[in-house]
Image (cartoon, rainbow, N blue to C red; front, side, top):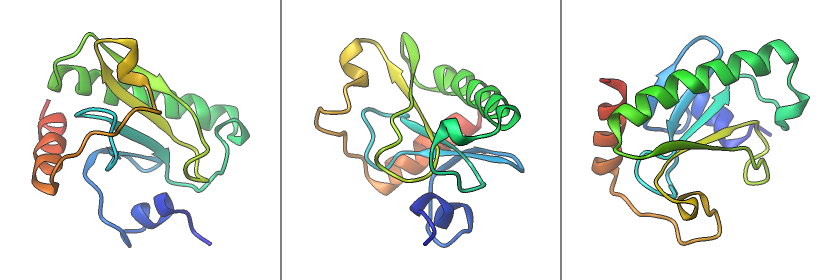
Length: 129
């Protein structure tokens, strides 16, 4: 069965896209830690990030870096935190989270809530950097 991320890649589920190329997709997390929380995924469904071929993993990190640069320019923050957890969805992904304190990367805390319109505006702000 296709993962929720594969359904997003295939256009079966909507997302707030911030960047895309032939191999990777970056979109806003709908249960973010804070505004601008982005997920970076390979379009190819691979369950575990360290099962990825080295070349693909390297390309994914370079793609994530390009997204992080735009994200930091669009969302005021001290840094962009990077996390790979991999338990929530069986599809390799990297979390990029604007952060000012360590607590901004605490996945156990209550998630932020944004309307669909607010998410769309944030995605546009990141894309236009």
